[in-house]
Image (cartoon, rainbow, N blue to C red):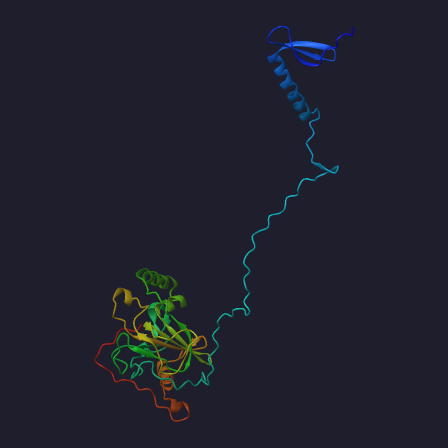
Length: 319
């Protein structure tokens, strides 16, 4: 009788609740719970052992036996800026062109009075080159005050261009002089012993300058305002209204408003005022010829500008 071979696999053991494992001739009796732990634990241990090797090399992805290189990071491009169109023509800064004229700086004539109906003042103290001892200087123009120039002078009376030319200065953004400036400028003059050019320019207040060509420039000062259409670069004819009489820039406009209403004009030839260094009689003759009529400028005998007769009306002090 042939011996019966043991069967492989799990068979019911004789003892209740026990299983008998028969594999290749050996058998092992275990409980069901122990065999279940063994069935789960062994595969888990095998998987963990395969994942963690002794040298713990980093994993590599291999395709067709060729390792894939790590991806190279791409540089992030800066956001494209909106292209700006370059100007086709470069901007050219404004430079006033000297006004072309036939004026002879040595024989100036043909100018009109800056105030309609006015004449030269009778007092030499308000004419060019009159001394100004309080600032160790001299007056550089003519002052047109009420009661001394053949016509009434009042605030906001129109001021006219004395000759054709181009505007080279128009103080449209003028700021009135302040009490602090009056004090500071007086102290500066006292300390220096004279009024420097910056101080004089502040004292002239709101201004319009007209270039008449041939290095001749006229200045109109102490204006209360500037006429419409008058700005740098504008060409004006003789007689055109430039601004209006006032007292801007004078210390009295701060300390005693309304007492210094007048027009100050200067005629500059190069860097000097007309009549510089001349005695009073020659200065008056020079300006009488300046304000002769246009016909005299063409060659007719020049009629001197009228000078008013002495008047009983007290004139303001010379500045």
